[in-house]
Length: 171
Image (tube, rainbow, N blue to C red; front, side):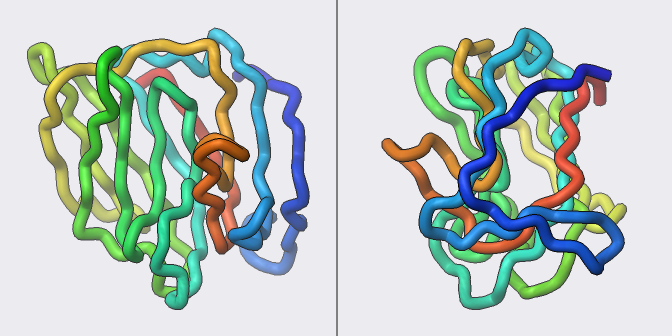
């Protein structure tokens, strides 16, 4: 395991559920993790977190994003997985509803499929769907943000709770 320093901007620690989580207000809260080689993932890798997003949140809000590499966000209440392939961002818009006011354990497994990327989605321990997307993620020297996409330029702040963020360099 790798331990990294982080910079926290405004989210409030919430306790009382199974795991502690950070509450993001959807306005200006985020956590920044400075770039580290351990965050530059080649395929395969796994992204995991716990998320609770209120039903009223219908915009775009990042669970987390490693700029020019990979990320997950909620858009129009549904989970979106993205990665940068060196020339463009590629997205997979799932049918999984995250913004329902309930806690969800979100896991996405990213694997090579020839020269493309296969993304498998698990919600609350149940396999939900998968897709094969053109290209493969690249590496970057940018930070990882939790609760935002790229503050303040392309912030897309999340309104909700996030806890238990894990990033694995394996499927």
